[in-house]
Amino acid sequence: MKYPLLYLTISFVLIAGCSSDLYRSTNRSYKKQVKIYSKLLREYPVEDSLGLPYADNWVGTTNFTMRRPNFVVIHHTAQNTCDSTLRTFTLPRTAVSAHYVICKNGTVFHMLNDLLRAHHAGVSKWGNATDLNSMSIGIEIDNNGDEPFTEFQMNSLLQLLDRLKRAYNIPQANFIGHADVAPGRKVDPSRYFSWQTLAEKGFGFWFDTTNTEVPVDFNPLQALRIVGYNINKPEIAIQSYKIHFVPQDTTNMINDADRKILFDLVKKYQ
Ligand SMILES: [Zn+2]
Image (tube, rainbow, N blue to C red; front, side):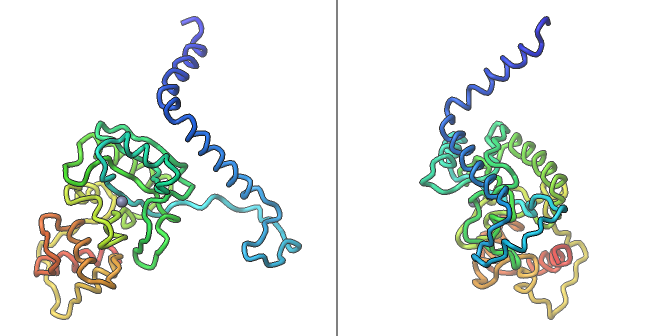
């Protein structure tokens, strides 16, 4: 081809044109907000947030990087189409967002720089962490909550998780679901989601209860707490644990099988 660069440029403009037409004004708003935060980062000397008079003592260090996400929180959108989710996340009045949205055909929409804070976890707790939004990447999978996840979605998800885990050195234990961090309030991703598949690829842990002998003094509720669950209200913590680890069981009761599972899990999560 005579003008490969020109051809590439035109193709890019055509491809980019499709989605940017629809979201031109919200993309503009994104840029505007990022500009405000860039200005904050460029502040020199940094104004103390509590208004304390440290400005005169400012000595900028030479050694720093951006803060990095340390958790991944997975959701289902509870909506019927990817388009409705993109729309929800670009309407200021909804005040909700995620870093990534994965559509049924496997297409991944990236909606926010990984280093910025999305509004996806809400009031949440995992271990002693209470501001999951500040420390996590939010991934929404297009699914109404009452249907299986597609193979395309799972493949795209695994690819994305692999990139995130490597890029930010996210520990295997820190791939969790919205229901895990907001028991009683959230049930996503639903029982159709295979956490076992994820654990087999190194995202979260799964259990193996072969030959597991549970000591008589084992406390399953404390085990749930060590795994990360907020056990202030035991029944709802158990519900979230079941959605994640025993999806076929819709009761909120800890039985002998659960005692074995938790005895094994606690060794992996502690
Ligand atoms: Zn959610």
